[in-house]
Length: 172
Image (tube, rainbow, N blue to C red; front, side, top):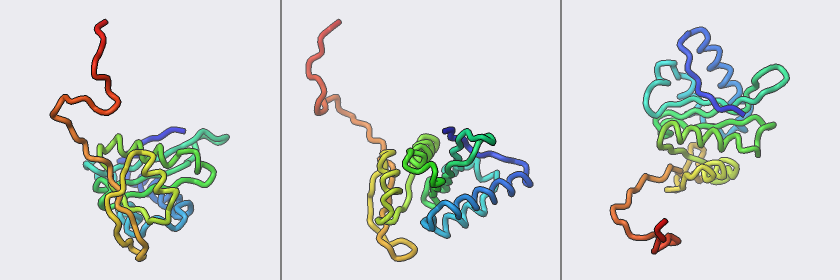
């Protein structure tokens, strides 16, 4: 599987590619992708892809007819505006979504998303990449929804030993 970023400047090519990705999301998103996230992605322009906090990634696999789309991930506003992942059923339970989320987190440095509390596959994907639930809210359909964020980078100012760390080190 290969994770790659989408950047297109040709307007005609961009519209076709974006339309194809949105169709993939509608077909394989299991009706769990919010309308708001789809609207934000539908309005996406190639210029927006260069802004901080915006990223469009695809997962592809090698097939008989060349590279085939296995998954899509889109983030806008570091996830505050939109955060979505859709994976083709043939590539689920193979860490495709986790790889996409990990790539988004690495690319953006921080990430946030909202996941319905009954969406165990998406929750597992988020937790697998180190995101943590920080709040319980009500989603667009009224379902209990978890606000999930990447942990804040905390720097320790003390040099005190941490649990499990050796107190004495032997010189070499």
